[in-house]
Length: 119
Image 1: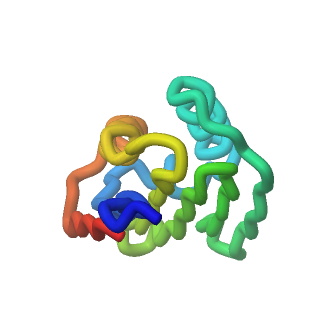
Image 2: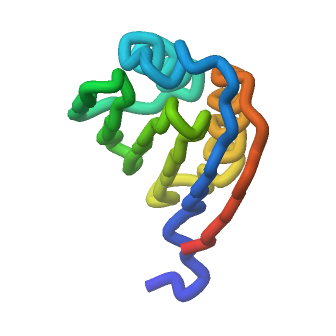
């Protein structure tokens, strides 16, 4: 057993998003996520979502490498996103940071909170 093994980087973000249309577009999130998954050669193994009465949504993308989860609050111009990729075959920490940057760019967001947990 390698005692230097690091299970991966877990990034937790709270973002401020002025464009409420993006906070109520599950379809837009699904589309950009498909692009991001392909861009970083990740493998989606499942997807679950729910749209609330006000159009906000929650979604979980299960990846072979772990997950991406999002919750939106258009009434507060915010979202939270949770990105975790495990390091079983290689260090994916750089991918986690790039995925986060891609979502920040897509949502044209300001970062309110940015936590990184090295697992």
